[in-house]
Image (tube, one colour):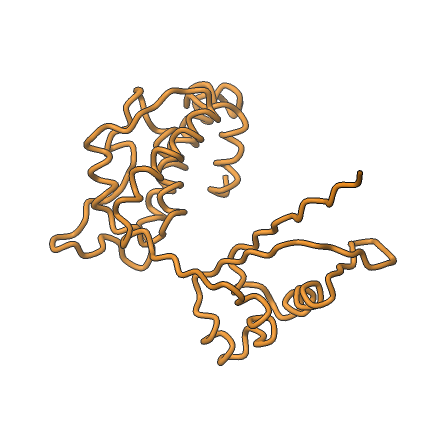
Length: 218
């Protein structure tokens, strides 16, 4: 007895950032149900469920001529609006614990969030949304000296009085990444450029160190 092949789901993040040529190819794939593989000579049939995400208002992008209206209507079948993290305070700590478990496991270390760190996470404005939260946790895993992640390990600026955002034009994220980069550079210098030794000094494995170096442009 033949079994039907399970339909695959393809998630496309930041769909509002793709250029016009890619939009045209994606529209054809959605309409015709086929793609042209790179280097291939014949189109291939595909059957996927598309899930897309964007932080842009696509109606505005259409009006500005940056996004195809026909593609928008093809994709906008079941719209889901997800509020920014700053409006979902109850989600912050569970997400942080999830990211901590993942990144701590990657480096073979055991970490927990100190109560003070959880309170800082709850109060932070999160202008960079969930990505900023994951970056903060990944950075803390590298910087933490002990098992408990402290507010100092997170390198998050305290909220401004009255709940106003404590960042300015996104420059705080650059400053935090710079602090992590400086720590990595110092470890590399102390190890004479030997990445394995630097990773050991930082308490992470080489794969994590390489990933951080790529993200930080080192």
